[in-house]
Structure formats: C-alpha cells, structure tokens
Image (cartoon, rainbow, N blue to C red; front, side, top):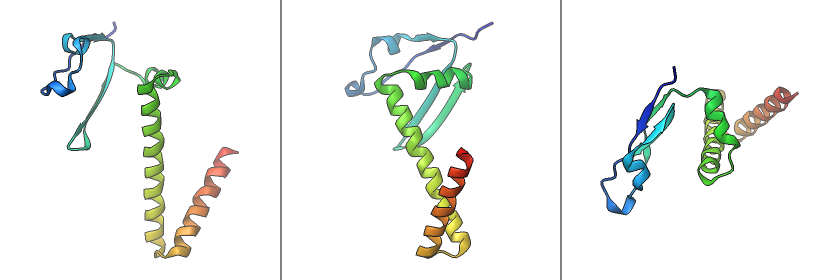
Length: 114
C-alpha cells in the first residue's frame, strides 16, 4: 500500500506567499523536505520516496531540478575541497603539499573512471 501525505506550507510573511496550491495542500506518495534557518541547513526529511524516485527528478528539464543539480555539483565540489584540505593538513601543509594532494586526487579520479 502506498503512503499518502498531504504537504501544506504556511507563510508568515505576505511577501513570500506560497500560492493557493501549497496553502491548501498537495497530495503525495512521498516527499523530500529541505529547510534552512538563518541561511544554514536546518532540517531534512525524506519519507515514502526511494533513491530511484528521487533520481528521476534529475531527468526533468525545469528550473527547480536544474537548481538542485547545480547545488549537488557545488556541494560535491565543497566536499572534495574539504578532503583536499584535510589531506594537506595531515601531510604538513604548504603549497607543494596542496599541489601534490590535488594531483593525487585527480589521478585517483581518472583511475576510477577506467
């Protein structure tokens, strides 16, 4: 049996009205909710949705899906950059260490593609 959810959104600022459809509620079998508070990730929840169902949104050609794809790419870049920084700190820092860490990471990415 499929799960059924009603997603309703309430805005406390008329400048950011969400529209009648969201105020009344959208019926869904599953959902992904990402929220921010003071410009930072706050809550995240995914219910009744599989990874495959979520991945199908990446095939859509609309503004929201494009923004999610862009954010995912930027987030992945940020994670890679943090990993490089950690590698460099572990190796003792310095420009040579940074360049070596980047080269090592790129070589590993190329090897993984083979």
